[in-house]
Length: 426
Image 1: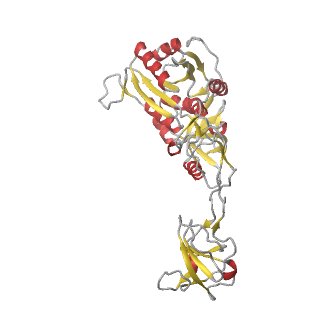
Image 2: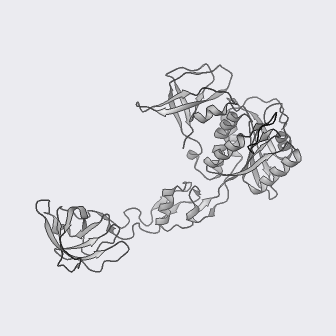
Image 3: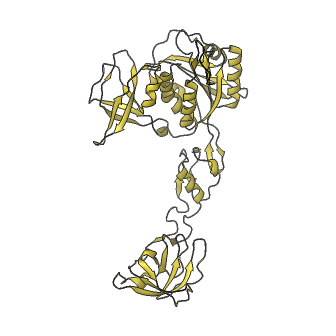
């Protein structure tokens, strides 16, 4: 489709459906658990083991029989002969008999005959030497019941339990559980490698003094961070000069090395830009005008690699705030879908917030995404204040914002009004 053909405005919902429907997840593979954090499980995980695999002590103290200490108190201690000691990782060498105790450490297996543990803080060892032959005495100052301070077999996970469902993100705690059940190479969806590039002879990023007409590159730097924050792997392709042959070579290289491509600029109606010219020729692109502000212009398409893979290309607007908004609304959820996340995890949370300052606008047929500062207050509700500047070129104000208020077509939101708000924090 010609990028400069007159197009009607389309809703963000229609654009989102089109983009998501054009992409898919990669082929699952196994990965060493040590490097699996951040990946998404591609299959359900069942435990083949009990965790813990044996009954063990939850505290440092003394393993005893509950019937021997049922009357123990601070005022009437019960004295028991200490017949052994067992540490974590060791096996008990003796069985417990009537009137006896065994010194035990946290995580150590329970001795035969013991049915509870008394914390060391509720005891007093009176012997001079730790012979543990029964001649040394420990005083117990607190009664205990059967099962006290014991972690039973399978207390955390039982063999045969469904531990995690497919499409669960492997957070550090999830990785710990996988290690505990001996799942050393989980099957995961591959990470999404994303080419991020900027184009323009006017852009510099080497820290030198600006020459007339030059500006410092910022979109690429911002988008690299946003890609990584979305859980994908950003690959920096740098600044590409305004040369169609050079740009085509870089884009085709990216299609061989990456799973998605993100560009910014050159997607507005009437623009002449090497990005638009090259992508229109080498990829199947759809050039859109979205019914939102900022981020009205947006392009999306597929670029085939030499192996036949179809690489998604996100053409974001050049204005930095527009680029930020279109990435959040369209690129971020798509990259998360491609990484295998469940639909509920594609988008950030949207919360109905109370406007503490007015969010003015005029009717124009678009939904406005206004940058706001959001915080929960004493009433338990999310409250928002507008940032000082809402221009699509004013990126500094975006650095102050932590949310986007979704202001529908109309005259805006008055103080005290409610407005759906996208929280831009994980």
